[in-house]
Amino acid sequence: VGFKTIDALNMPVEDRLRSIAFNIRKLYDKRRDWGDRYIYVNIAAAELTYVDGGVVRTHVRTVVGRKDRETPELDSEINRLEFNPFWTVPPKIARVDLLPKIQANPRYFAEQNIRIYSSWSEAANEIDPDTIDWFSAEARAMRYRLKQDPGPENALGPVKLLFPNQYDVYIHGTTHQELFVKPARFFSSGCIRVKEPLDLAAMVLSDDPSWDRARIDATVAKGRNTPVKLLRPLPIHLDYRTAWIDAEGLLQLREDIYRRDKLPPKAVLAQNATADR
Image (cartoon, rainbow, N blue to C red):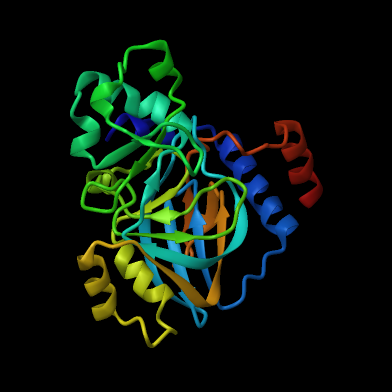
């Protein structure tokens, strides 16, 4: 028995009941009716479910945002995807995550096929990373635009699935397959990572006869960025549930890692229990 199991067993039953009550209220307030075709990501469980024709076609583990880079809750539609995507590195990730790596290893950007541009302007010039003093104040401000080419080193993997949202999050692959075996998978910067992204892409494109799995694999093998517009947009729902009943009728509970559960006071729960009697 590990420490997290001990912590879970030691949680007071009143706190568990409050969490369940909150999730039930959230479910009723949202009054969700998602139809018979959609993707659902439970952020708190770090799991993705794809439903088509009212049937669960796949249910897989994901990696979602860490505590300081939370994955948002939203409803949207996947309307396009990209095979062999480029990755334009967000400024915060460039400054916080990648700058220490190039300072420790001057060849890091070359090894990762990351290009450096002088600014975020479309007319910006590409810069040789060897000409930059990465310990200077200008470099530490990281006003450069970093863009990673498609390939095996690309942080997004072989495909990304895009849906309109204000947070610039999406579903994509990853080079860190080892994270999927962990029980708590909160490691991304907000996006949703999946272990077998091409399997998911094939399901999403299943109603387009021009995109069978053979063509998908051949497209990825070419290594060229290839955008694809979906014939029929696919609804996607990013939700945060710390308590629910699964398909087998079992109660599932997860840690409120983002501290989003606004639980009612214990006194309110006690009053409700008395009223129910």
